[in-house]
Image (cartoon, rainbow, N blue to C red):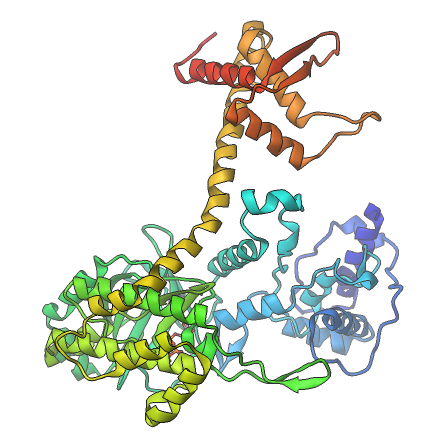
Length: 577
Ligand SMILES: Nc1ncnc2c1ncn2[C@@H]1O[C@H](COP(=O)(O)OP(=O)(O)OP(=O)(O)O)[C@@H](O)[C@H]1O
């Protein structure tokens, strides 16, 4: 794939500017002017010009390419293209730009250029074309996550690196966090130190949520720490809010919530009232967990059936027992933390529990009811009993695949008994039973304790890989500190003698080996093996060869380790030559 191929591919995108209507805005050229003289790119693959097929990943490229080809056939089409070109183009849901839809679309057009043999190399249509078509809702280049890291030897993967799916997931989340707000959203520029507001979900104006209150969620950046947060805004009638929220005591619960830190609770940061939205709103600030879904969205929302093996099949799958137990344990842990703090959760509901990563859930919207229902002053013990009953409903919902499982309890029980073990049934029944003196969160945890131990064992494996590669990064840092220090460049005592010389040659041995044809050997297994033996101080001997190949040293990994430690100690104690 020569460099001219690159030019050919991109030239399609910029050549259309010659047909631009005189007063249209011109997108900044992607290439220097001289590239425009490069030969016109002619794709080798025949391109269909009929009406576009649905955008499934492999088809997307062909379809989008055909759009781009036909757009050069006349200025009319092109004008449409340019009018539709909006570098901040956010997808609209109910007329509102919507961050999660945007990110979803970004992921939808992510196409792995190497997946299809037809698309190998740069001769095929260019995925970048997507940004120059009228359909393109944004111009950012989709990231090819699989290209971020080199393939690793399979045998080493489990020990030293987190799995590719987790890495992909983390990269996508980080990308969501970086999404910039679109101009023209009509949102306040800044509220109480939060800026760059973007609605997280479509704003449905006529829907009442959180009981009788209407809530809208935004992602916003905090000016002090630069981190993203969720602002959950509750629109209130002016009289209502003045009356209810005028009392500072209504916010005291938020202070108590802000102190609770639990891995299964979305942390509450603060709450305030504002008129910045043109009305009287209460805003509660929570930590932001990019790309999370509610339990309802993840497991209960009906999914459109899809063709599989030639048959239309339902995409809704029953939650496996292991995951159901994991959820029960996490929720029980969260509720215990809240009850121990003398509070009640008040919203244990499938639409208010977030799945923030694989099988990790967190209770959301905590504290909101405490402010909104401040005057009701309900008995905490009673509210805590209700938490357990609400947890029971969640278990039934997930187990029966039904958002209202308690409308027909005998039938729901029958489903649970058929699908899950007796233990699940017992816990579900215990939770929805009427409150009694013994029914507390501590008692529930006693009942499920054997399952808790099992869950704990499973969580540690992934962490081990991080422990291992963290250890090796520390060794690499020491190499970095010791070798090639510019201030000692002329000091032969530093790099060409004793301890440091051996470390320098060892570094060559690990990273700079060449094969019999003089080609660099790039072998991650060799590097990891050497670093591990070095870390362990192995007695195994290796031969280090000087760069001029005139001398060699036979040393053990243990010798190198000792010398490296000594050189590093020299540095940290302020060696100055
Ligand atoms: N703290 C958060 N971090 C990241 N995303 C969040 C957070 N809180 C909510 N969201 C996102 O906002 C979306 C809407 O949340 P919300 O609590 O309003 O749920 P909902 O399904 O719309 O419930 P309701 O039926 O009450 O509207 C969720 O899908 C979730 O992805």
